[in-house]
Structure formats: structure tokens, C-alpha cells
Length: 157
Image 1 (tube, rainbow, N blue to C red):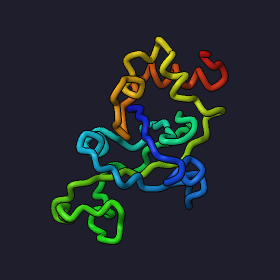
Image 2: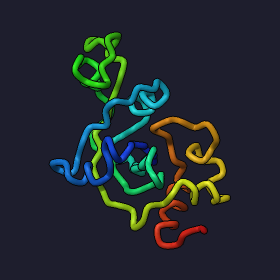
Image 3: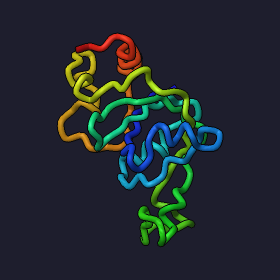
């Protein structure tokens, strides 16, 4: 099993939106970064666990846990001229963009803020806390995953 972190702006699609979806499941569309696309296409597998991260908000941080329930398949929003994610260069016969389906597992017991994660020595190599990291999807190492879960009840600061 792999571990991941996926970012979304709560004003666009937040953890509560996922929880309120039918079967608490939704496709993760609109990723338009090749590196993130490649991870969804080549590495994400059914059963992988994912941190839901709220970005571009008052307190960015980890707010929940999701699970991959469908592996990578073509992102249909790339073919829809009415979609904000439309890509005229994407072809249904040779799709450029991929999405996965994710399922809500639970909210974290508290928001685990980015500011706190940045202060944890155990996470100094985590992509999320490195300067200049803008990826919306990133791998999480098992030791990082377990450490972050330990922060739910025991803030590091």
C-alpha cells in the first residue's frame, strides 16, 4: 500500500463535500500537472491511503483521510469545452489527463496545520514542507504517515 497527500481548496471542493457525495466517493479531476498526473496514472492503486489537505485557505493543513477506490482513468473534464479544466489538446483516443476515484474515510480529529508540520523534525524531508513545492499530489512515506497520525491527539507545538 502507498500513502499520498492530495490538495484541494475547500472553497472549490473540501473534505465535507467529499463526505456528502453519494457513497462518499468522487473522482479527483482537474489535475493539470504532468508529474502529479503520472503519479495518478502509474503509481496510485486501489486501497492506497490519502491525506486530504486543504490549501489556499486561512489555515492550510491536513483535514481528513481518503482511500483510492478506482485507479487512473481518463479525466473527462479535459474533453468538455464547458469545463474549466478543458484542454483542447487532450484527445479521448489518447488522453493527456488522468483522474482517480477517492472515498471519504474520516476527518482528522483536528486540522493538522502546515505551520505545525513544518516545525516537525521528523518531517524535514517530506515534500509538503519543502520550499517551492507546489504539487497538488505527492507521495507520503510510511513513517511520515504514521507520525502525522500521531499528531492528531498530540500537537507537536
